[in-house]
Amino acid sequence: MLAELVESLTTTPAVVVNGSWDVIASNVLARAISPSFTVGTNLASALFDNERARRTLPRWGEVSARMVSLLKEAHHDSSPDDTRIDRLRTELERRSEEFRRAWSEGVLPDDYALHVPMDHPEVGRLTITYEVMRVPDSDSSLVIGHAEPGSTSEKRLFELVSKGEPWIT
Image (cartoon, rainbow, N blue to C red; front, side):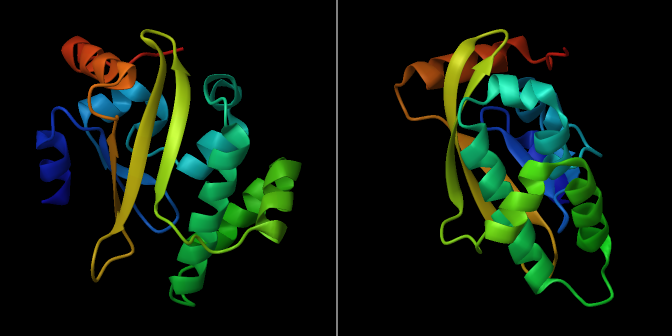
């Protein structure tokens, strides 16, 4: 049902993730913003393992640190029987010095909004504010994005809406 709601949002990028930040649902606009929002992608791995993320996110360090803090929160809140985050953490620590450092320094989030500027290959620079909302009685979160009303980013976001197809690099 949440996946259908997300898909029905046509002017707002929306993604649903599970506790280990695997994308379990996304809409066309989210996928047009980034192929990392494709169902099945782990957003933490996409940030730390993908050079495209580093190229397109001018504030990659801030975005990746926030991702680690959200993962730490999910780890703190997860059932002892749920080992998905432990496995993901082990994999990312093995592959990324930046992840190891961020995990050791990271703190739990105090804010669930993040302003993310990005250099989109089709529309140029845009800034999206993402709000993370926990789904009650679930390990899932709904992530909704929006641009500042009347801004260049909003115009570029609507340009992506009109294209409707995700970009691939």
